[in-house]
Length: 112
Image 1 (cartoon, rainbow, N blue to C red):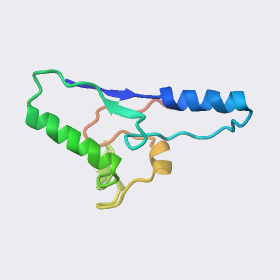
Image 2 (cartoon, one colour):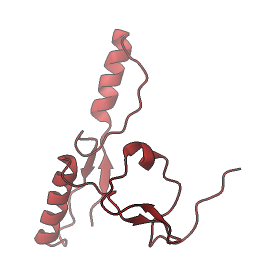
Image 3 (cartoon, one colour):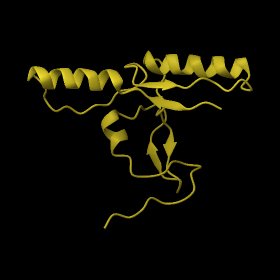
Image 4 (cartoon, rainbow, N blue to C red):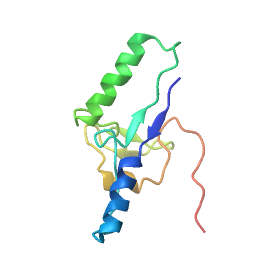
């Protein structure tokens, strides 16, 4: 009843300005809510206000670093613990995640 949107405009503008100025250097980008690179689309009017408020509060907590959506325990969909209770998955580990979490059916395609 809403969607996550990716907002790259400011990043692209900054990157082009750096390229024009001759100061651009390649960087890895891992932007999120805090950086304004991820936002929620408007809610469908049928979504109850209390649900909207909860989603908005949770998003604000993620952006402020008060809540991390990848906090253990996390198990893969075969029951193997991948992150212990209370531990927070780092961005580096998250970027290499090669499994589905508990509750997701299926298997990742095998690389050749």
